[in-house]
Image 1 (cartoon, one colour):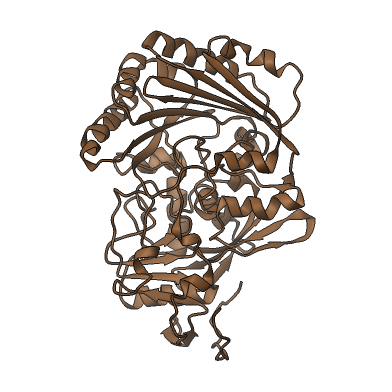
Image 2 (spheres, rainbow, N blue to C red; image 1 turned 180 degrees about the vertical axis):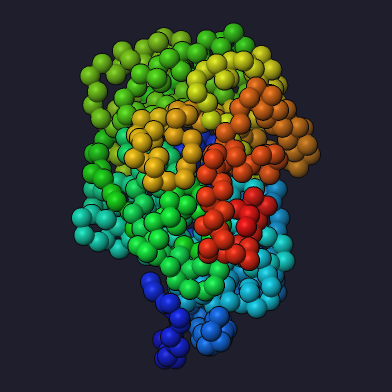
Length: 493
C-alpha cells in the first residue's frame, strides 16, 4: 500500500467543475492494473503547470503519473492490443483525477504536442496513441456511483466487465457490447451496440450527460451544451477533449439469457448463398429482444442467435436456419450475469487487422459479391467475415435526432477480421483483407461504423458521420480550435 501524504492545497482553476464481437475480436488489456500497482513504487512528488490565465496548477502523483520512455511503467501503459500497431509517444499521462487531466493538457500545450486519449485501448488502428506526442491515459479512472432513478455515474476507465460487475448485483443493465475488456468510453463515444441494443438503442442512446476537459484546460458539462452531448453520441472519440465522467440511464436486468449456436462445416459458395439468404430472412423477423450474428471463418460458418425473453414460437421462428445447420447447440434459461462472461473474449496482445465491412440494407448488398467474397474468406485461413443485426430501437427517430450517429436505418453491420501468429503471414492476409474491402467499395457500400475504423477508408468523414461531419466540425472549433486532439481520422478544424 502507498503511504499517506499531506496534500498541498490546489490553486483554484478557472471554470473548474466537475462491439459485440462474440468469437474473435476481444482482447485483454494491461491498463486494468490497480492504482497501487501503477505507482511502480515511485515517491510522490508535486508537479506544476500553468492554465490559460497564468495561474499555477499543482498536482501530485495522486492525480497523474507522467511517464517518459525511460520510466519503468512506460512499456506497460504503452502496450497495444494490436501487435501491428507500434507507437512511441513522448509522454504517457496516466491520469487518476480530473486535475491530472487538466495538468496533462496544459503540459501538452506548453510543449506543442498533439494529444491522443486512451481508456480501454481497443482502437483497431491505434488511434488512442501517437508518435512523439502525448497520450492521456484515463484507464485508472474507474469509479462507479449510483444516483437517483437508477442512474449511474461512471469513470472513463471502466471496462465492460467492470460495468457489468457494478450493475448486475443491483439487477440493472446498460446496453453495451459483450467484449469484457472494451472500455465504456470509446464504446459510447463511437455509438456502441450489442445483445440488448435492438431493445434499448445504442450505448450512446442511454447517455444522459458527460463531463469533459477541453483543449483550454477548462471543465465542461453537457448540462450547459446539448450540442456537445449530440456530438459525443457517435462522434466523440478523442475529438473534442477528455471525457472524465459519464451519466447513464439503466434498465431492468433480465434474469435469464437464451442462446443458439449453429454450426455449418465444409461450406461452399452455394451453401454460403443459401445460409446467408436464410439468415437475413430470419433475422428480419426476430423480436427486439433477440440478436443474431453470421460468422464465416474459412469454410466454417457459425451462427449465433440470442434472446433474453421467453418468446412463444421462437424455435419455430429460427427453424429455417436450424434445419440447414450441421449442428445446433441451445443454451436456455442461463443466468444472465454468468452467460455474459462467455463472451468476454480472447486475451492479447495479438496480431490482427479488423475493420468495418460496411453497413447494409439487406442481403443483396452482400450477395452481389458472393463468389469472390466466399473465395477470399475460404481461401485465406485467418480471415473472418461477420454480420451482426442492428435495427429495432436503434432506428428510433428520437435517438436519431439526439445523436450524431447517422446510420440508424441500416439494420446490418459487417465486420472484417484477420488474425495471424507469424509475422510472415501478415502480407498475404492483409492483401486478402483489402481485396474484400475493394469488393464492397466497388459494390457501392460506403457507410461504416466509427468504432471499426480503417486507415484506408478514402472518404472516412462521410463514411463514419454521413451528413453530420460539418456540424461536428463546429463543435471541434468550439472546444479544440487549435486541433490539440489529433489522430489520422480525427475531426478536422
